[in-house]
Length: 118
View 1 (spheres, rainbow, N blue to C red):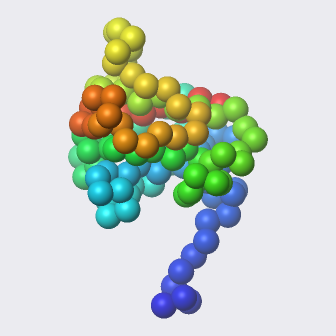
View 2 (view 1 turned 45 degrees about the vertical axis):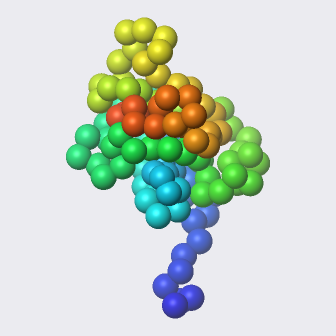
């Protein structure tokens, strides 16, 4: 079993043109999707099993410790539409590190796309 396990290097998570974002549905560790988001490109979650189910997010790491030890300028915006469009201030959230329990702020079923910037 251990021979099949792999550890992601920091270079796999963050590059100058791409960052890996972990999206978790409830219950958190039963439904996790890892996506590569390219700098200033919209990534739609349409046709993705986690679409509309994101409860927690980690940007640039697989755990809180790795995310908090990052020394870069990446941040991501998460949208309630599939086109990464901003028509009003309540249509997106911005995080540089991550967030837990999006349902507590009414966003438990609203994330449909994301865009990250370096």
